[in-house]
Amino acid sequence: MSVHIIVDGYNLIRQSKELEALDQTDLQLGRDALIDKLAAYKRIKRHQITVVFDGSSEFSFFGNKGQEKGIKIKFSRHGETADSVIKRMAAREKEKALVVSSDREVADYSNSKGAAVIGSGEFEDKMEMAAFMDVKGISEESVADEGWVPTTKKKGPSKRLPKKKRMNRKRLKKL
Image (cartoon, rainbow, N blue to C red; front, side):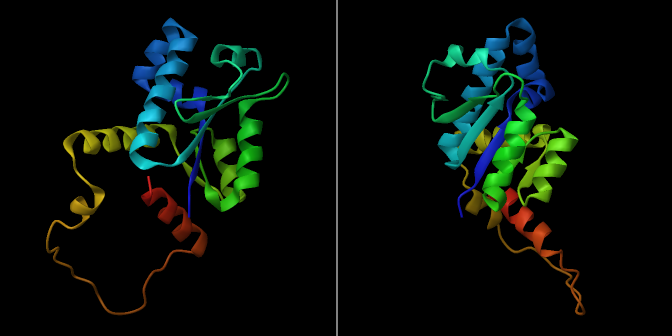
């Protein structure tokens, strides 16, 4: 199953120390740096990524294509917030969506529609880890198969998570 990552653009920029410093200098620099990071992540992981920003007049900075470096870029219309665009996309995509936002309202709504949710800071850490593993030439399989791991599993009834939480965990592991 393919994962569609929907990123709350300004939320991720403002949660990141590196991107926020660029954003305070120039709003366009912050957006460009975010798109560069997302494009690098997409080259490694191959997930479909859409980043959503507030503001309709900002679209002219990226031209009329709505896509840059393989990342789809959406701006909210006049009188609409990026949060409402993200909610609408999460409701449409349902289980295929993974929403990146630290906004509680967006996260709760997306989760109620079946989309997996990850905080902006946690997703930034995952992007950096993927870039590090790519530079070092480490694959996820080699990390998982590093030899015997002693276990002390007990017999008895298992404490299985509800199906919705198991599915969310499965999608987050793909990151």
